[in-house]
Length: 154
Image 1 (cartoon, rainbow, N blue to C red):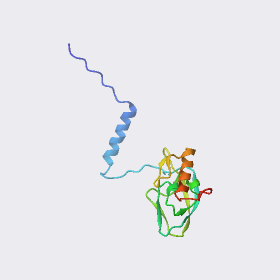
Image 2: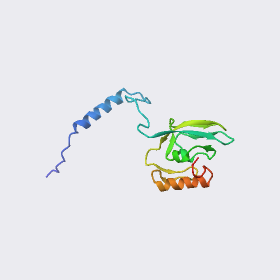
Image 3: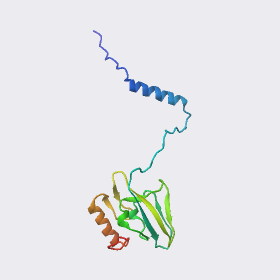
Image 4: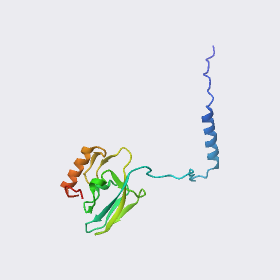
């Protein structure tokens, strides 16, 4: 007796339509071409922001990158580190802000996203940014290492 072959399923209408659209798109593409979607992309929508006054008390320029946990930046920059905990610069990815010696600037910070776990570049923060104990330990360490003064976290 001949072995029976399993019945082939016909593709679902959704899959068939998707395949047709993809084939049509591929036929009209030029190799290396970039096809953009429609509409605007709103970056960092609905994330908390804050504005801080930052002064460079050092003798050299300091540059801070877009995705650096601002709480952890160079100790020569003076600002409210307690307020900056869990925030980064609100600038486009890959850019930075430069602080010249003696210069005071107002910067806008935006809350870090994702899983909100940070391991600091200066060893101040180590853990979940929404954990009060992690924040308290980071502030204590910032005071011990001269990043800010006790009491005002400046």
